[in-house]
Image 1: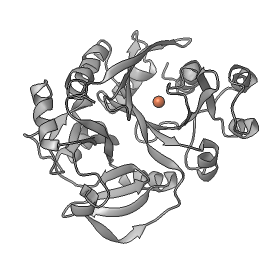
Image 2 (image 1 turned 30 degrees about the horizontal axis):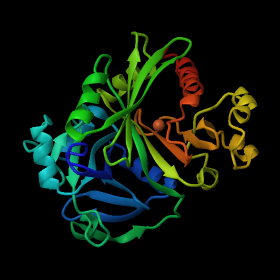
Image 3 (image 1 turned 45 degrees about the horizontal axis):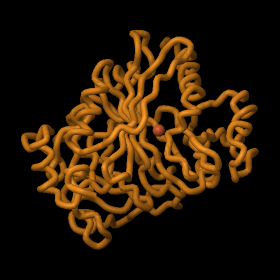
Length: 347
Ligand SMILES: [Fe+2]
């Protein structure tokens, strides 16, 4: 990888920092998804949860950047830590390339950071190897950790941003010009009453993607509804990668993690479209898992929760050689969310 196409030396996602007026609910959801509560940032009420290579922080501080962020957004993703080869170099280079430095705010964590989507923060983290990670030095073991069963979630596959109409290009430029992301896909999706546009960008390290959505027309489409509820642009969903989605779904309690309702007609033709799925088709339908394929003998399985943290939801995804986002399902999903919006009287 040359300096030109990966100017900041980005290597992946390190952590996602959550906060909420109801952090007890977030805690319960993390445990249900199979994240163990292990550590706490020394001197602050910032708790660390882990499952395989997914690292979550739950910030309960009453003051500081994240507390202020929650005041304006409600349940939120206030920051992410992105892995780089050299954090100071990445920070300086990002600022030179047009990013806004976050050295003027009461950051909760002592790492160099820039402003990202919706004025959340992106921290640069260069210590993430086991034994030399920030968790090993700046975080202390909890006297009473809560260890829960791993549910097979391995790492964050992608995160999706929702932005205001007319600003998708600006945000795409932020990711491409500052970090060296490249555009991999473009979508135009229409429901019966509403529509949206989506760009998908891939990180220069190839380890994660960021699709960006903006709504079309002024009809309270699902993106505009998110922007109203969240009070600005931000993360719409995070996708957890698993290598056995049926098993992960078996392990999740459907009474605690509610997923989108998929029309029965979906399963009448999806296995004709994607006949080479290896998993038990009955089990896929029982869990209401979605199936998609971009090419022969490659496919992905995915499932989406309903909104979990304010308007933020979670996707669970298994990839069998397919590196799309479930394009063939966009219509089914869009229709499902639109039906839900109609039920709620929003559109
Ligand atoms: Fe997704």
